[in-house]
Amino acid sequence: MDLSTSGEPVIVQEETQVDVGVHLRPGTLTLTQNGMDFGAYHALVQFASVEKQPWLAEKVKFSATGPDGESVGLSVDLLNDACNGPRAGVPAAIWQVVALAATSAGDVGITYATPDPRPM
Image (cartoon, rainbow, N blue to C red):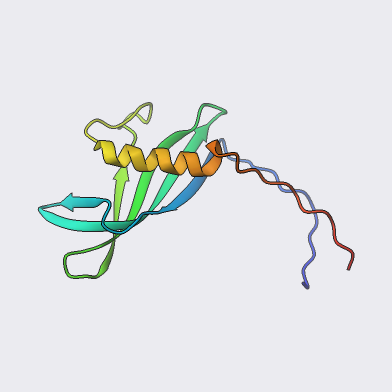
């Protein structure tokens, strides 16, 4: 690898965001919008933490197949307008997707360790 660096990265924003993607088994989740059904096959859940507060799920972006067989993207905002709690009326199945993403991100013990330096 022909790359060098200098300095040390520092996060300067007060909000930290993590996106977690989960693949959904086709046929297990149907999203209906404006009377049209979409078969979800992937979800990207955006989690955020502001000023060291607990993590909140703020949005889910679905990849789905539309009635015409074409891929489409659908987004669901999860926070209320004040951004201090869950949005009313979000279907329970979407919260299940959020829980699956949260579980896959850390509750199952996924950890990261910096690799040992390798001699060049």
